[in-house]
Length: 114
Image 1 (cartoon, rainbow, N blue to C red):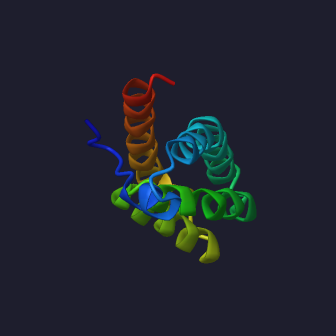
Image 2 (image 1 turned 90 degrees about the vertical axis):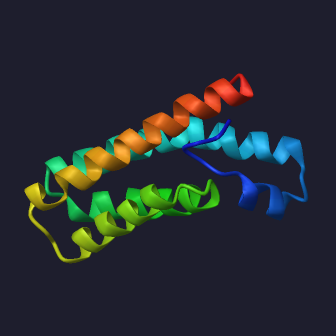
């Protein structure tokens, strides 16, 4: 049972097309972890443009999967990049985001046998 994600939007835009839903979930599983790694590196290196690019890329996926808290955190990261913030200001937000995404990844893989 989905606790860390909600597929209502995915089902709504796909007219309950299960193949489409699986495509979205496969993209989530394959791309988002890599994108988070790029955000992490961008934060670590104070490369605001790198962190922004990958946060911006990840944002729609988190929204589509109904991950509201993670979506809010990615928005905070985007704002941090635009303000050229200090690293320690955003590290806790990123840690929380990573935990939320990891939990959703584990759950999706289990729920859909991926």
